[in-house]
Length: 372
Image (cartoon, rainbow, N blue to C red):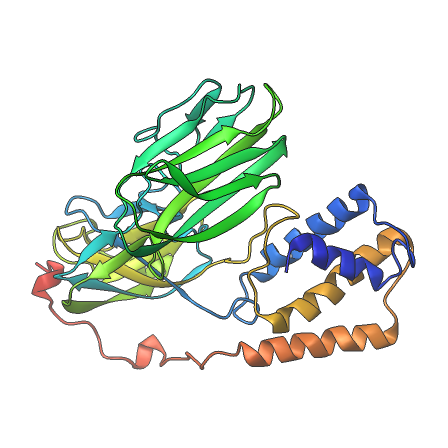
């Protein structure tokens, strides 16, 4: 379901804009901003976002403090995730490697590498910007695709005006040919069978009519993620600790494999501190709670289980009712509460309570940790 559909249905619960009326753009935008606030505030709840995401990163032997999030030392752009809300568990994997499956060079436009810029295109600040552009001067990149393979082309746009055409060419003929006229995410699946391929973005209107930012242009083999772990190796547990325990440690950042990790959810990037610097070749693996349902525009797809949509619809109506001098009826409030109870029941996780530290065995000498 699109965000625009959800906010429209939500306002109907309080009879806005009235039976047979057309919802105004201002009221729709206000309701969408309310939806963003609800989703972002609830996203730290395990009841609302039940799944965990797995992040993994290479460790450096001389670094024990990392920034963590989009564009950070531990960059979550590869996982399409924002800064995590919480690290639930972590361990270090030895003897494996991180494989990158992305087939578009600089797919997130952190660099212009791989792209040929036509007139009017700029690549900066994580986006390809198309302002005043004459037709026939494209942004393009030559690709290396494997015949007989099915791929997924994924785009993320911030669209402000005009029309943008994307073509995925196979031996000079397009197998994907689409006009993009709204903001949001686009997905196109195709099977490649040629010998030469490229991706091209062009204006589909007159000079100066197309105004758009391309935030992401990704091509992956169907069923694969941007990054994956390859191989089998040993796992070493890493304990998530608090600030007090980290401060008590006599030496920090020394050599040897880390066994403790401190996570600080700062803004805009989080920070990770290890008791020891890492070992070259080791991979840090973390299971984290992440806001995967963040919405950027009215055309965004709501990536949530259906059992959450009903509660969201009534919650939006409840938040917006006051702006129209209305309120939900007692029956509607009961429906909303019942919908949340069912959402929470479906997303309930196992109890993760542990034994108090005072009752646990005291740490012993560990040569891998670098104990003197």
